[in-house]
Every structure is written in structure tokens, then in C-alpha cells.
Image (cartoon, rainbow over all chains, first blue to last red; front, side, top):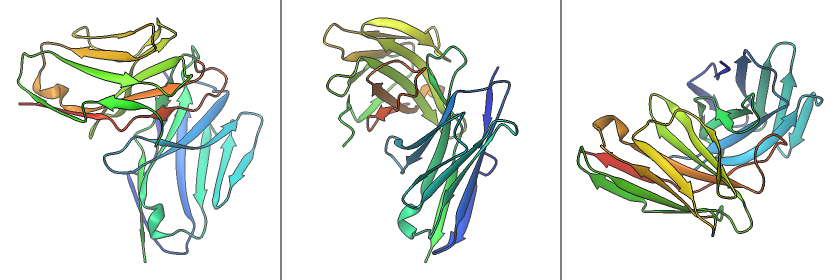
Length: 112
Length: 115
């Protein structure tokens, strides 16, 4: 079955630096990948979607890449701020195209 | 505010009991998804309904069931509750089913505590 791995449970960086989060997947070739942000006690919030024919997508300080050969997506936050501290989840559509499957997430802490 | 409403926000009950969680999707959304989130398992997909019909099942236990009503709200029924069912249960909605890159809008969740 398909497997999604976000290789860091936690990432601590200083304000102003670039945070890079990794999402790897196996046993599947998704047509797209999504990233969500989740704050404690709240539901995930959609950030970005990248399709298999797109190498890179940007939105303000966020950048996502999608390497279908490596089966990996990288999520970057540039000029990070303490307000960026949250858990970031990557998600893929399952092979049947009927549901979004999530990784366990990476908790980012940005210190001032 | 995502536009997805979940009630109740908190639920405390005892083992062996049955509870019902309710979800109202965003206006116009036909798809409703249920997820369970615990610290060790992350966000686990349970079930998906589209316009009243079940579309997909994930890791949903036989003790759990769901339905989507004609007004598109959905209910998740959890019975014979066990301590391990304690978790945050999320409902999410989208306009159409997955497959074309639909983003999900999540409610704020129901925190279930089984004592």
C-alpha cells in the first residue's frame, strides 16, 4: 500500500532562516500532492497543491517542489517567522482517487 | 473560519458507550470526509461520502459507522467505545470528490475522551 513519510517529526530554526520540510512517498505515483498547516487543537488548513507536471509552485514566502523520480516533495518557508510555528502535513490522493491520505506531519518551531 | 461546523467540540464518555458526532459541510460542498487524529497515528482517513453515497472507506472499525443525509450534513457513530478510541475526530468537506486535486476544508474537530 502507499506510504507517506515526513522524515522529521520536529524542526527548530531561527527567525529569518529558511525552513525546509521533506515528504517522501512509496508504492504510488500520485497526480498531485498537497500541503496543509495545522495549529494545536485546530483542523488542518490548505496551503498549496502541486501537480505531477509542475516542478515548483510558489505562494508568497512558501515554495513547494515535486520530484516524481525521487518520489519526494520539499516544502520551503523563506524568511521564517515565529508565527510560522505549526505542524505541516503533506497529503496525497489515494490510488483509487477517492480520499486524501496524510503524512504524520513535521512540527516546525521558529524562535526569535 | 473554514465554513465546516462540527458538534460537539468536546465529548467525554465511558467505555462501552455509543456517541454521535455531527458535521455540516461548507455551503455547496457535496463531499464529506471523516478523519481520526491521535498522537501516535497522525491523521487517519476513516470514510468519504459524496452526495449521500459512500465513496471510500479507510481505516474505519466495524464499531464505527457514518452516513450523509439529504441536506448533506453527516454523522459519525462510534459504538462499544474503548479507551483507544480517544482522539480528535475531524470532518472535512470539498466541492467534488478527490481525483482532480480538490482541497479539503476542515472543521475544528470533536475531542473524544473515553474514560
